[in-house]
Length: 428
Image 1: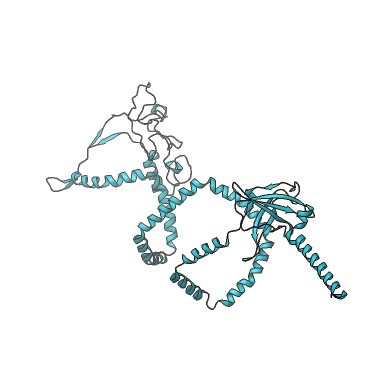
Image 2 (image 1 turned 180 degrees about the vertical axis):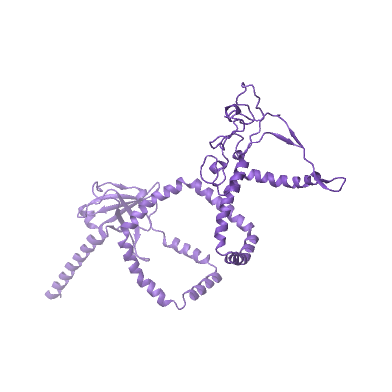
């Protein structure tokens, strides 16, 4: 016979069992949603289940807000029904649904990640499209890819890399420790300089736009640089010879400067004056150097021995007026006060006005076509009136309309001779 105490114990056990079963049913089985029908349901379309299952947990911002209540196959994947608890926070409609795994061996669950804040919110019957859902990489696929990665590594190459890394970092433990410790300081300085860094990134757009606009010039510069480097490669022997011989040449130049002493400066300054005189007359100097050998050779025919053995020179001078002498630009002889009179003014700037051999006054009864323009002031010019180079072709300190005293009587005489405009003659 069952005693009264035993009956009480059995009754208490039954009550506890019913309460535990009810808790398990409402907490894990979802009897509250089945019996009471609370909350609202939304659907999420996945391309694959990703390991999700019915009654899996649904979280929003890391907090459980519902359960997976159903799964159905559709044309392009799997539709998962999510039942959200009535007391959950409103979830924005622009939300992503992600199947995640709690651990390598844990169960899957659904994470709701909002992409926007505020209304509109998810409501009963809402569907999260497949382009806003994702599933994890299957564990078996990850292990297969990892196995392929490990198998693609050459063991011998890996051994060499490990050995070289060991040699590279051997004895550098303290340095690596300081590097890691100072990493916090580096990050702190970077955080302090964040506004300047952001401004630099923003302003760099202007620099990049400039580089884009100058891409043609940059390409041309790169091509020219390549040509320059190729030329250096071709001239490599000469450059090496220059580098080898340069010290000796430098020593010779230094000895020259030391031996010349203070007089070298005066010589350089005087050469500058000589250059100013010579440069406007380079054509004449060249002609003199070309003609001088012929003149010396012809000198042997000018000087001969006569019957008595005496050296005598023979000259012949034939005057001609073809072409006529140039008179345009000069004062007529009738304007002078007397024969042989010399004008009191400086007439060294007077020049012939015939340009390119064309008579400027064809109606004056005097043919000047073909007249040669003489005078040093026309050297280097186009055949017309004008000065040759700086100073009107005048010698330093000379006339030519520039004024100033001559350097010496000899210089003045040379200037007068160079500016003379003789009549056309033929030497014979």
